[in-house]
Image (tube, rainbow, N blue to C red; front, side, top):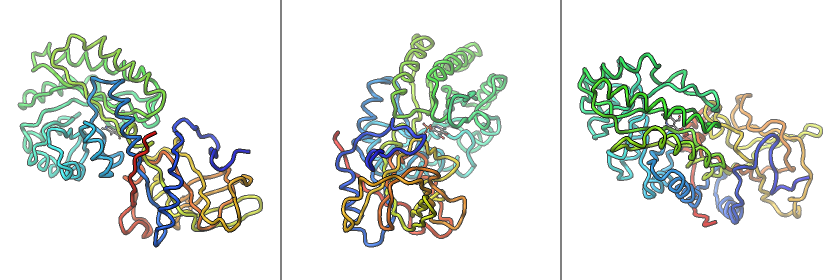
Length: 403
Ligand code: PLP
C-alpha cells in the first residue's frame, strides 16, 4: 500500500513529479497563517530556470515566445522575460499584461490568426508589428487598420498525435497558401514567414520534422513567386517538460538542418506554453466537506471545474494529488489505509467533481489536498460561476527551489 507521500492516482503517471523538498513544510506554514482558508498556488521559479536552461541547451537556435494564455501569472512572466523569453499574445489584454512588465513591443508576437478590429487598432497603436493570419478577411482588416504589420502565414496541421488538435479551426489549407501569399503581397504586406502548431501535448516528434519540411516548401513557393524572401520559421507550441522533449528537440534540429541549413538570415521562433508553466505550479486546496458512504469517501474541496480544473483546456493526466494532514491531535495519520474516494468541487453543479474513483488516505475537513503540475491552462481559464473566486483568483506564493 503506498503511503500518502507516494500516492499516485489511478491511471496517472509519475513522470512529472520531482521531489520538492521543503514544499510541504512551506505549504503547511502558509496554510496555518491564512486568516480565511482559500485555495492558493505556489510557483517554483527554480523549475522555470531549469526548463529555460534545458531549452537553451537542446534548442539553442530557437527563440521561445511564451504563450501567455497558458498562464499569465506576473511573476512567471517576469521570470521568463528576464531569462530571455519573448511573448506570444492572443489578445489586447495579453499585450497589455506584457507591456505592463516593461517588455518592449518588438518582443511580442500577436499570434492569433483572427483579430477583432479594435484589437488590431490597439496593436498598431503600441507597435506590435508581427502577427499571424490564415484568411483573406484578416488581410482586409489589417490593410485598413495596421498596414505596416508583418505577417506569418499560419498553416493547417493534421494533429492526430496530439492531445488537443488545432487543425479543425486554424491554419491555411494547402490549396489556399499560394492565393493567400499573393493576396497579401497585392495588398502591400510582407509575409515574413510561416507559422504552425502541431497540437498541444504532441507525442510524435516526427510531427515537427514533417511540418518543418512543409514550411520549407512555402519558403520556396514565395521565392518562385518573386515575393520578398521569408525569414521566420515559427514552430509553435505543443511541448511538455518530460523526457520526450529531448526527442522532439532532436527532430526539430534535424528538420532545420535538412531543410533550412542554406537559408540565410533565418530566425526560428516557438510558442511554448505548457512546457514552461505546467510543472512550475502547485495548487493547494482545502478540504471543506466530507461524507462517508459505505467504504467510499466523498470530499469537497474549494476549487473545481469552474476554477483551476476547467474542463475544456485543462488535462488532468499530468496532475498529481497529495493529501496534507493539518491536525496532529489524532497522531500521525500519514501511514493510514487508502479508500476509494471522490473529490467534488465547491459549486452547486453536479458536474463539478475533480477526482472520481481514486484511492486516497482518509482526510478530514481542514486538511489540504495538494495538486502538483497545475500551471497549464488552469487558473488562466477560471470563472466566477456560482459566486466563487469573486475576490480575484487565485493567490500565489513564489519561491525558488534550487534542486
Ligand atoms: N500558440 C498558439 C497559437 C496556441 O493556440 C497555443 C495554445 O493554445 C500555444 C501556442 C501554446 O501551446 P502549448 O501550451 O501546447 O505549448
